[in-house]
Image 1 (cartoon, each protein chain N blue to C red):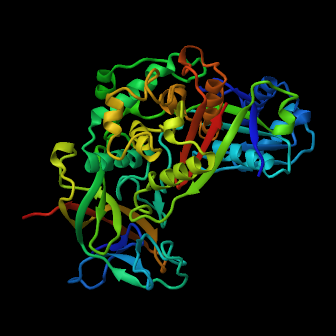
Image 2 (image 1 turned 180 degrees about the horizontal axis):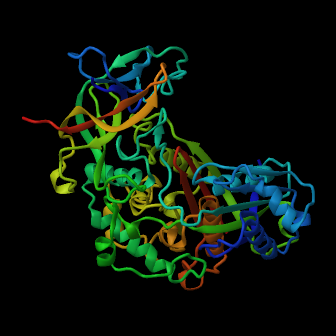
Image 3 (image 1 turned 120 degrees about the vertical axis):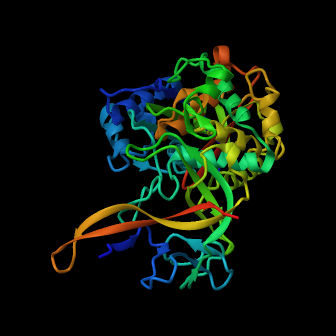
Length: 148
Length: 378
């Protein structure tokens, strides 16, 4: 039996159907089309529209805007890693780890095409509704350089 | 609104004071500022205290409980790294509005060795730091520097030179947490924290306090012959820009604040003698040269190369040693910047004095975001 999967953050959706790929969601202003990521909203901070911002499915690819290479972090966080800002085609940016690339400025190019991947990052054991212990896989998204 | 003057400033040496509490440090700075002004706590009509990490501790009142429970209005503010400068601004507004003639601002923070700061590390109960990128300050300001590299071809060495300059300045400031000169090699070869910022390109954590006494024009003559005028006080928040909610935009709100400050003060960047700006990381200082109009867009790298912002250059920046050396006890920082500008405009800077300083600018950014600019004149 496979473990239950849970997304690390609400912006990541993990469809139940096995042939559907995970994807990111954003919220788009019906008035000015500004697109947000990171949770539901009361309104649009760009045009001050107040009301429901419909959810939009975001692309699983984008381009690298900027990055930093983190060599020192909080205890328990493996370093070095590349913290990146990726621009998505929908006009919104997402913060992520850039993976499958050497953490070396010489190897990282501004504007490089990147694709989203999902990976299990940790497990959590919880009691389910029937009081039974259940292992849950926490799934996160990453971006990596596009493979030709 | 009426004119407001700074008549007294006080500051304790930034460092580590594990045996003191926040209100004691704040009270010590307050007493120094009152002494500098030749005033008593009995003269003060309102006290504003800026403190971030103990914002619920009623520190303004606790300071009065140390130095004089006169029953005046006392209030506590927090605004990220702009906490101290926001406290100063509230004290300014109190006098400028005509409601009070004499007010006091205290900024104080006790951070100890708390290490890396910031960044919503959790999302729905799961820790995301180091998985969905980094929200910690070194990476945030690393990325801001890398953006400048992308746009303008700035190099890691340009940013490192900021650190060399500010550490060089710090040896002349006895109140600086660190007073150590470092070479370009030292900075470039130091442990990398978050590219392109190495250890010496990140401000230290620590404790500290600073205070200022503000007065209306009709009061100053009783206290001083050398009042420093607050030519303008500006506070901005981050306007909508494309990536701001993913990658905090520290540039636009500073540009907006600078434009408003120059207009209101009738003073341009070319008229400034000295600038204290928010160098929480070396990358930040370089960006703010452009944001504050000290040079044209894309020219900041050349500006540091040419030494224009060193003591002796045409617009010295962070002669106090900056946050990189002086330290950055969050709530104290904004008031300490005012302390330095006042010291310079009075000609009391000693070996770090900018000759003939007549107009100075103090800039602070609190990520999240808040930006203050104060322009002071003789």
